[in-house]
Length: 259
Length: 143
Image 1 (cartoon, chains in turn red, brown):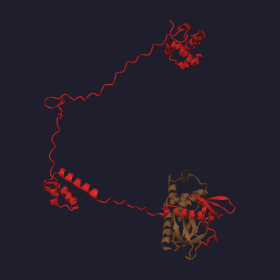
Image 2 (cartoon, chains in turn orange, purple; image 1 turned 180 degrees about the horizontal axis):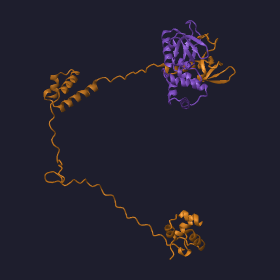
Image 3 (cartoon, each protein chain N blue to C red; image 1 turned 180 degrees about the vertical axis):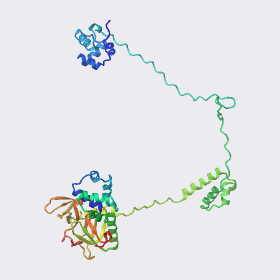
Image 4 (cartoon, rainbow over the protein chains, first blue to last red; image 1 turned 45 degrees about the vertical axis):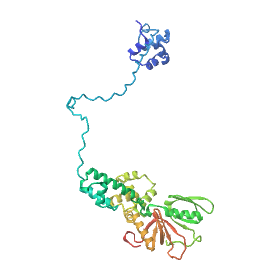
């Protein structure tokens, strides 16, 4: 009994691409055949039979259309958030596992008496405002010996805030970085800047014995560009320079060259 | 000139090879040569390593040892002292010349030498630090 093309192809473990290449029929056409949208002509039926190693009459010329896609079940609206279920409690306040669930907060235990250090700190802070022990006790409304730790903490906090509010703001620390000339190259660059602005002719002596003269037209930490008397610009690599100075006659003799 | 400057000079003179390749060729731990070239403090205490480098560049070992004594920090100290005291200082350059004068300023790459005579309003000589081979008091000697 003839079968649909798609069923045979799948049974043979062949992909659409493989069948297309083996039969010489385009994938688009094969899709049409498999969907039943187009009847398979006898010429293609023969090619497909050869490609699938079946007889022509094994392939149904008109495949049955595929079943319609399943309609998805309508989604339910999301449930509103449920209040967290509390485990059922027994009459004695425990749940079924025996754990106790406190129904009410226990009353806080009374704060222990203030530590000596708290009192001493409070007295020190109060003294900064000229408040002695008697005045402090009058302000608090009880003897310092009766203060609890919590109360002492509160009063220390009050005085600390008062100190912070009434003290003059700290001056920004004027930090100066250590002066390390070996970490900067500002002096030479400033010198070159001055010579460039003055258009002073400089004489450059290079490692290899060459010399150049010209006015500075630009410089960087690594190079100096000069314009010589003919108007040509020459860029000298500072690594190649041994020293330079103003041209003699343009400002004096300079440091002594003895070599 | 410091050992680092001398090594950079030698590397440039020999084609400017890659540091790591040279280290591998010499048989040094990777980073040794880079460390020597870049540090400002005294480096190159390992004479065996220094001998390998000297052999690679074809220079005598004592040449590298000479530069080892003239590390950059030592030159900085001399320049600082000379500027503070206002004393005349002499510097030998790689070009074979010697320059002398009072240090007016110094920085990372160069220093300015002004004429010896305070009355001489002559120009400043700007000397590149890497050009200085030797100076007064270097290596515990007075040149």
